[in-house]
Image 1 (spheres, rainbow, N blue to C red):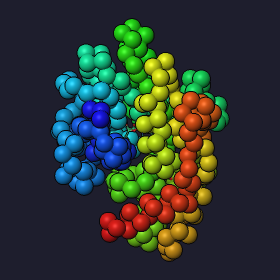
Image 2 (cartoon, helix red, strand yellow; image 1 turned 90 degrees about the vertical axis):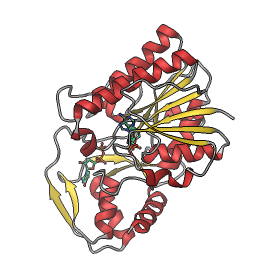
Image 3 (cartoon, rainbow, N blue to C red; image 1 turned 60 degrees about the horizontal axis):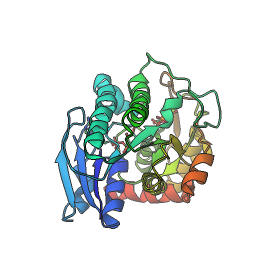
Image 4 (cartoon, rainbow, N blue to C red; image 1 turned 45 degrees about the vertical axis):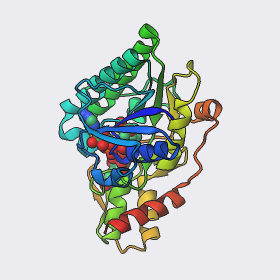
Length: 310
Ligand code: NAD
Ligand code: UDP
């Protein structure tokens, strides 16, 4: 039985990770400031005596004795991370420093939930880990993208300078139950709009692409990554390489919900990446992992979740 800290544990991905780690018999501390996370996501875990919830902001130091740290704290949806961009950068940068400092003191392993956003609006397609990216340092997405890039730098420097055992994964668009219905991300927006028979909001002409990964596949990869040998630091891409245009996603959601929604076009936000698809050769070779749940099945489960909220 391991003692495990999950920062951002009340969020969409964090809540699934906490549940899975408890299922495996570990003790889990879920640390969250509840900016975008919700107690509802972890309510079913609270009766478990091996589960503890701590309200805390990772920009301030935290002390605990644990074996492993999964560092997920950071708003992930553009609406939320742009709401207080300075706090977003602080969360990634100070959060990384505080978690790495703790890992150094107690000799814990620490995994960073990085992102495909480190590739910005990528020119290399599909994205490989060796690609350095195409990121605007002064745009409206920069607080998130650059914060996550600095976090990766800090992880690598703590590893080189202090021999901390680190793991970096670059997560590509992930969806599933426990996404906040109003967090503005595309999958939750489209499903909620379709279930309410409201117009589906396509930003731009809907020809931009994303590759969508179901959350259970991601959680499996996170745990496999944490369990790798010390020399495996990453970064490793974790995503589903099946790429769709946003318009294709909208049409799929309408068909699967039997909705009468129509498509409506809104301006494309600044710096919105035109294409995104992970090359997952490294994940396959290192973690013996690849996604098992494809879009149709994942959407079915996610639609059922949003229906249950209505
Ligand atoms: P989320 O917004 O649902 O979860 C983030 C959690 O972090 C929330 O519970 C929030 O309250 C908490 N948090 C935010 N700032 C904090 C702070 N200063 N101190 C403590 N807690 C704080 O988002 P998510 O989709 O679950 O993302 C989790 C992690 O995975 C994030 O780091 C995100 O960057 C990364 N990621 C997610 C995706 C995706 O598609 N969902 C893709 C790439 C990377
Ligand atoms: N998007 C859209 N309509 C929406 C929400 C998002 O067309 O209601 C588009 C958005 O412009 C982007 C893609 O869907 O091109 C994915 O957006 P999301 O915010 O989910 O993730 P990210 O841009 O960070 O990949």
